[in-house]
Image (cartoon, rainbow, N blue to C red; front, side, top):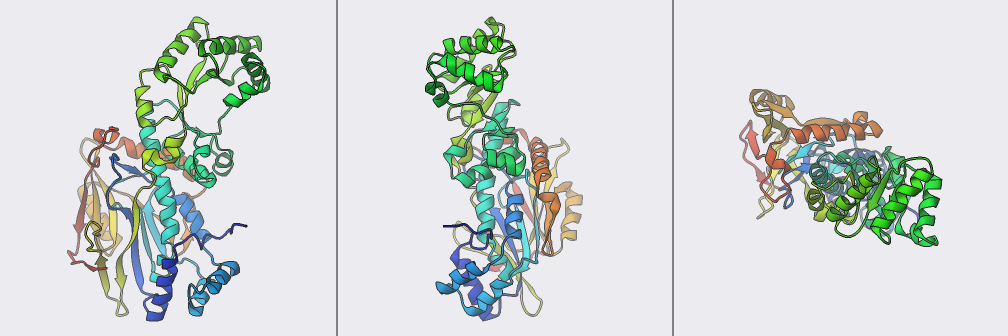
Length: 454
């Protein structure tokens, strides 16, 4: 079975059946506003991290129904001939505002605001949600881990613990959250991420003894390599590793610890390395780490952390719980209607919203301000009055993707922006314990218009 280059069928069937019915009823061309947001932050998260915008934009550029896609829809009688004709020439021509990658977000923050016809906007729901729900969850976990690491590098080693393609996406999201590298070569190639890795226990075990394995690795990679020293006895492994590196003409780069009591092991190994004069040899630790395990190692002489399963699964929260909802449409007479769900526990707020973050006199964020307005200019006036930093940028304008937010430089910029945005948050945001969002979300409706039911 071959996979398609197009992204059009990375969607739920109901999006196309809605389109089919809307084309028949005459509402498909109504101008609409959809928003992608989370009603609340996941448990234990005091803020979320935006990731996946670039991947979404790349997917949107490839959102085309080719003849094979159309044949599948026709053969399975999913939509009518009229809808097939519409999809054959589908191109997104609307405008999308969104939070920058790396930005922090909170309850109801509009990570994407889509201005387009109902027909154009409704069919991209799943591709947008599937990308951002995954990437935001991983980036949010990565940010907590880099907070716990207090400046020590964190490295992604999670590709073997998730879907093969999800591992590539997770590596990129982890970089946005502050990670310094990945073990995944496809991620390195595709996104320009620094790749890392030396050997596993199998490499030691395939040799006649540990010494032979260390000599082989040092011969191939030089004395500056990282040797895994806990296959048998850690103390003997460290002694052998240092000696073999010196015999090769240099100081050992690092030792890796992957089992046991990592805190106690790190202290013992650091003491042993220093006693051997290997003061420059670093210690890296792995073994099912999460933000809490990393925090517990804060006082230990550890130089870097390799994180796998907990990173790529969002450290227990594998989805950011984002949703995609219609908040406004314009009828045939040109009248705008703000719409909202009234369902119990799933209420939404109608109207297009423009987001800003209020910065207090102390330089820290104090609230997420969502202005319900028909025009962005009015919202920006309110931001200026209240000292709020505008949060949304133009990701797509009239169907044209903003190239500032895709490509290798976009990833570098996203990581830098995240550090800046995270530093702007008040101290409670940095706590790893469960608690309320770091800042509250407040609304201002410039027209004070009543919502209707969706």
